[in-house]
Image (cartoon, rainbow, N blue to C red):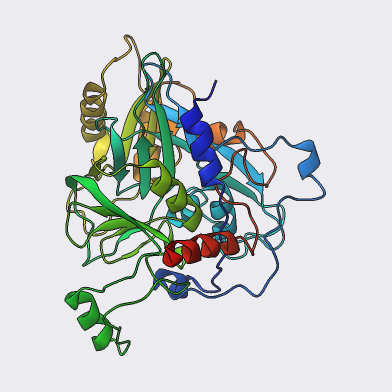
Length: 390
């Protein structure tokens, strides 16, 4: 049974926002953004979706005792007008997550009927499950609300955008020190200097509104000049494109703003390879190493085996007599695909695992944070006007 907290949070997370789409990968990476001229994103393939189950929830989970993994990998068929960004927004995953999970699929024209792997199973970061935990390598935020006595731990997870090369998001521990609705953006001198050098001078203050890069809500951190906030460019979620701040989909930041109290601890880690338990299965999830991460991935069978043993020791509650599928570990680490895969099944391959993953309708999951409509921004705009009036 869900707690009243989860019910309230999910109601908050369902607040809608607008959909922005871009036509070129270069424009997306540069965060140029562009207003879509099309209609609402199609919710399902009318010829096949009726026979498929509705996707399971992708953001709110109860953690089973002793487990480190939540969620389920799902597979959908692309609609004729889908991009991978559209599917990512629908399922509350980020751009790099869905692109990494689907090598060889055109991000902008996957094609009607193309199967798309949606990586909505998550190995939790190796960190204390308290407050907000952010894994930079995964470009993902995990929020662990306080559990009441006798209740299981809950986790809420969302994709994020992080600091680009040269403006890296710091690692370590801090706290949420304040919250602001309808924020103004005050660019730092370094940001204004960069924009001026690029021929794009910024004002000293960018007022609240649809063009504010901070979006509609902000959680300010104890680190000066860093915050968790929304965005006016949703396609940038799941990319390295900020000046160090942590960016969320417009609908997701609304839920976090309402759920996260001031004083909440925030831990930022950078863990490109994750290992955890789900029941008696050992599960691995790997992401590409960030460009400015000086650590090198383990090379060769001996190094990988030592690395896996180290990760297993870091996780409490090790299961006895668990053998590791070394061939599968090598495949996952050599070509990270952001997919959580059990690596304690000797005969399993990644291809076989994905072939057996549940096929679901290409529609909004249960309790989706986004409403899927083009006009959803009006609800957030109304809230901003109300806040400004007070």
